[in-house]
Length: 437
Ligand SMILES: [Zn+2]
Image (cartoon, rainbow, N blue to C red; front, side):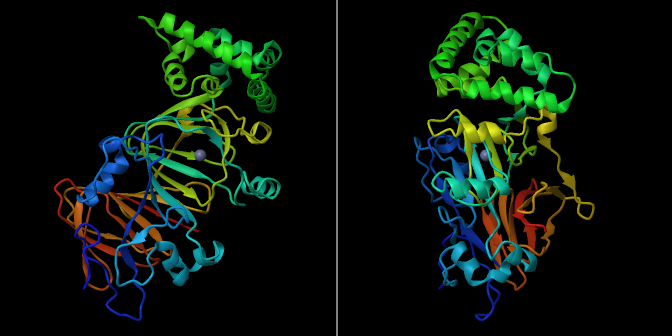
């Protein structure tokens, strides 16, 4: 007997005991970090309760992340008790060919990415991730702090209007804040500020000046920046009544200060771009790019690693020397931080978010309401599929049907395809993570 583990969902089978299953539903791990959106406000909670109405969403509990992958701290559960392995990680180690011929070899039999949904209520720490070379070095030197040898490129795709900090602002903007925000100027000091103000158009000179200013701030005595920050917050509050706070980035400052009072990260907003994404827009966080997620819901895909160097908005350890030494000090406007997606010339429903790293690609599949039958094509990579909108009955290679709906998560082995017979009136929206080498 096959139990209806997944909210009444039926299960795929290849129809043969000897051959491995190729497509099956997953029950994914929820992380209840304190920064997450609470109860039914959270997109994570909405997705899991849509997929399985029997799930009880707790009104006061944060639902921060949904982990769709095989990470040991949140290995997805396979919803088919005909499969002897209970989790995706154990299934992949038994069937490494499911990863795809190249992926299996290049990533030593591991799923190279972790796919997530994030619901951010309170800002996450300002951070950057090392490149592979630095990751190896940091792991050798400080294995407790940097737990693996891998890089950690990340991509965030907005599901709801989403805000984050990303990359250094154009120099003119930073100089503007040095003029308009005397407390920020005081933390940077005259010498470093003049270096930036007097820098020529030579990119090298600008990067050096930015690095100097940022390092002075990060190494500033705590009492100095706390005093300056308190003065700034007081002044902005006094000026707030009826005045435009843009010159001091006042709205964001007050919001972050209420979440992290006395944190140096509150000054980091004068260095980094505030990036606002509309649903479907994305940011790619490559090596050494300073960033922080501030608010909203997104899909995230990343290489499998836990290597994070923090810069503020956190009670956790900040490795100032590593951080200031590694960052990408290339200034650029916020608009350049929005990562473009590419339409697939062979399929008008498919859009690729293909970052310049081998570890992952995210595919958006948007099927219009006029299309009732659609095939999710096979590729030579294992993939994970998340339904954001719509309902369908789906059929894999050997006929056996499964009903998928908003919140459903499917694992697809390499070279498996899925035929959808779409039941919803407003089409479907799905995201698929895979590895295109
Ligand atoms: Zn990050």
